[in-house]
Length: 194
Length: 229
Length: 212
Image 1 (cartoon, rainbow over the protein chains, first blue to last red):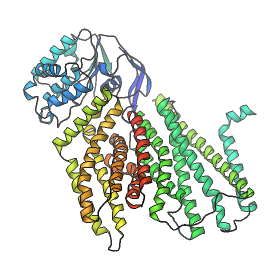
Image 2 (image 1 turned 45 degrees about the vertical axis):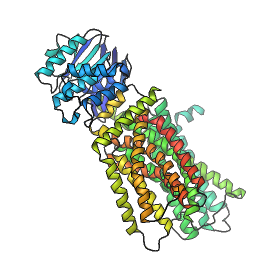
Image 3 (image 1 turned 60 degrees about the vertical axis):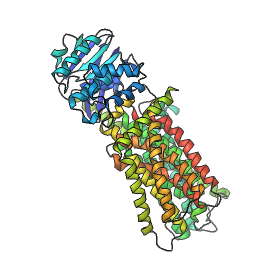
Image 4 (image 1 turned 180 degrees about the vertical axis):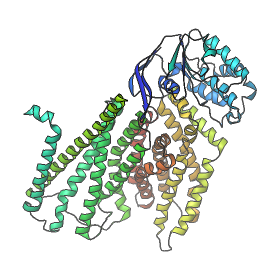
């Protein structure tokens, strides 16, 4: 699904990734660890296609419609409600049976009761849940997740854990985290960035 | 002979440029007759117009390299585009300066809005100066190259559109009309003009190569330094 | 077909955002009227009628700039452009939607500005209105793309006027000419040519501005 050879990325003079080789098979679950600034976010952004490598090659076997990216930012409009945000992404990703799917996800992540409230009024944890809904909305084949457990409370962590287990088979995961032990049972491999 | 030229293209161009410049200066000051109307000061025409044409050539080349960068992405295209536009701005500034000197010598004013050429250059000078502001306010990387390339393409499209606009603007700005030496040049004048044009294009070419080489060297030095770390 | 659905989705989103935030359009309205008042004081008494026309266009260009500076502010501050760029839609749809919503805001500002000008200074003919309509297209298409460039840079609001003003010169020439010259038709032609050429080049190049 993802193949990288000699992948490098620099920002001005700062070299963030240096000659990285990576092989992620279809259906694999790769956990990426590393200190702050080690390039976890950069690697995910490269795989998502938001950044271009400055050297080396990177091949991702799916197009934009097949990628679900959970970024550092929730990527939702603060002035729009949860429902409106998901409807926007649902339309852009041409999700079939959009309304049902949105309703189902909101319910699964415990946001149904606040669906009509401005995302700007949400707590950090709720925003993260909404971001997860956004990421999973179009049933992507490849899930790129940047510290998905960030800001979640115990209930949120539980919900996410369940979701990941359900989705495990058949989808490919690349997850950056500070907490690899939680994902150890699901992982098929791990990558530690310097 | 041709192998030697290919390997030493840089110095060869420089030598050519110097030769042509000397020839042009000799022709301008010692050979070509003075213009009947404007006298000695008309001679700046032999600098001003070729410099303007050279500036256009630089902007055009910069836009071409920008287009290539966006289309085929050859590794050096962005740098070449930047260097060409940099040179273009320098020649553009010279165009404005020589134009201003000519206006002062011919008509006694440092600036006139009636010269469409000059006004167009002012607009382009502002546009391409903003190019540098744009380029250096984006962090180095693919984003900077892409954004610069798109802007360079906008510039080259702006040239004809602005020219049309400036021509039309004259109808309601009512400038004081000055007559100027038209394109009907006597044979000797035309020849001198051509030599001067060739000289400036050669100069631009030599400077282009020089600046590219220097920037390439910077990149190589940086890479070496990093490899040693 | 899906392209136009995407554009409609995104335009609706932008209009909805403005409806909720209600900051850009009121600011543009207030700015343009204030600018016209300043211009009254800036014109000495012997100034021609026509000088006021010119200043109308200055007011319109700077009002548009005010709106354009905020065009991508939500996307920039909250990193939302990533979300849009990741979507499978054509990236130029993002540009077109933003330009259309900007067009809407500018028209709203002009619905106030043009009558205000007629009241403060003197009446305007249909060629001026046609000129304004055509100029709007040029301002919004080019301005939106430049706003995206400026949003990606460190200098942001400082940069957009520098990028925009040289490109606005043909628009101003076309607009003023259309209103001022006897047979203003060819100035409308200039505006139409500008709009067509730059719309195409913006549409084709937006992808490269927002991706790497």
